[in-house]
Image: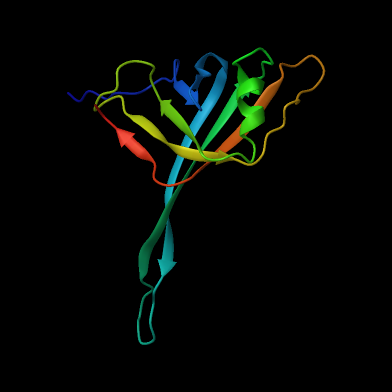
Length: 139
C-alpha cells in the first residue's frame, strides 16, 4: 500500500522586511525558474538548449490593513526601495526536510494601496521580484 502525502495550505508563514504579515495572507506563490537558451548550431538535426540565469519572484495576495506594522505600513515604503528580505514557509512550524523555508532579498516595483469593489474586502496583490539567489532551507 502506498501512502500519498498532500499539503493543504492553511497557515503559511510570510515575513516581509522583518514584518510578519502571515495573518493577512490569502494566497502565496513562490516562482522559481531558469532561462532556457537555445544553442543549436548549423548541422544539427534537433534543437539543443542550455540553462541560463535563474530568476524568482513571490506573489502574495493580502487582505489590506492600514494599521501600524500591517500591510500598508509595511509595503508603502518598500516600493522602489533598496532590496529587503522575504521569507515564505508553506507551514508556520519548524523548518525541516518536509517543511522547507524559502528566503532571499527582493524588490517591490508595484503596489496598489486601494483596491476593491463595493461590498468586497479590500485586497492587495503584489509581486516581490528576486534580487540575487533564492534560498531553500530544510533545517
